[in-house]
Amino acid sequence: MMHSILNIVQIIAVLGVFSSSLYYLLCLWSAVRFLRERGEGESARPTQALPAISILKPLKGTDPEMYESFRSHCLQDYPEYEIIFGVSEPGDPAIESVRALEREFPDRRIQLVICQTILGANVKVTNLAQMLPEARHEYLIVNDSDIRVESDYLRRVTAPLADLQVGLVTCLYRGVSSATLGSHLESLGISTDFCPSVLAARQLEGIHFGLGSTLAFCRADLEKIGGFASFVDYLADDYELGKRLAALGLSVKLSEVVVETHLPSYDLRGFFAHQLRWARGVRDARAGGYVGLVFTFGFFWALVALAASRAAWWAWIALSVTLVLRLGVALVVGRGVLKDRQVLKYAWLIPLRDLFAVVVWIASLGGHTVTWRGDRFQLRNGKLSRIPQ
Image 1 (cartoon, rainbow, N blue to C red):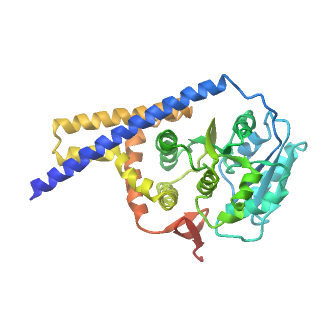
Image 2: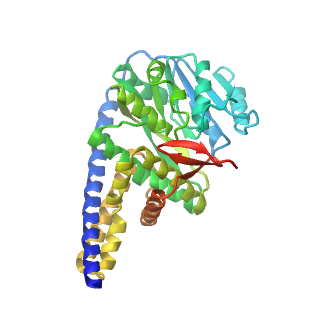
Image 3: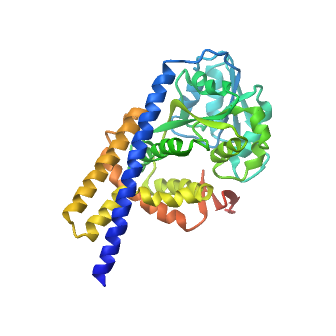
């Protein structure tokens, strides 16, 4: 009986190793295609007129290196733009950074909006809905408070919107970790797992979602989908925006620009909670694709095959091939696409991070509670409902 069970486990594990290897090859192919297209795009920079832009940055509390991230938006090589910040409470500590920014850049149009009306469970989108009336321009960019950009960011991100068939432009990002293990694991997850999955999705079916690192779009298209108010209760607001614009027949373009975020000093508990929130959000947004992630856990399946086969020679080969492909993805995407300087330094942690991913995936399948910026919510069908303190 035990022998039969081990044989079944071996078969399942081998299938898992095989499917994961195919997935890693897809990620490598997708990354190479992206790098080639990026090179072609950089050799033919756009020359069309540069439209005025309103940058909307909803805030709650402080983030690592937040002021420098704000500051990078004031150093843009761009003729006309404004930055609108929004907070839901007049005592929010982020306000101090906004006021300091106004003092350093008195000639830059910077505005702070206090958004005290509660429109839905997602405070970020509630703020955006109340910030939008203050925006003067047709072209909008929304990005997270911790995003740091280069001086040509606005020129390059908005260029694709000159094509009226492009409804949204979004960006990959790299994470700069703090000194803790949880922060290193978070950074590795972004550069070696999440971003490769975005590139693979782009290659297979195109992008039909946005990433909170950058959402560039036109006000008129936003109004066609009901404005921000139409998804104030959704956790994955960036996903909803991209999905709804794509449903209009507009395309979502992944920019060649890569932005940067400085990660908090997560302990392992904080890292797990953050990953669980993200995982349950993806599960509710794309249930089928999320369940399919089980076929991409190559290192886990290789270890299962090794154990079930009692360390057979073929299982060692399977483990070696899996690790080579996995590290190949990490280097090509992390170093090549994202230019993440930390990938090589912490590459030895990738197997540990991948095992954490399996634990998070299993935990995310049961339960509907998520924690976001200190508040707890129930998550059902992508929508949030606040759990009273």
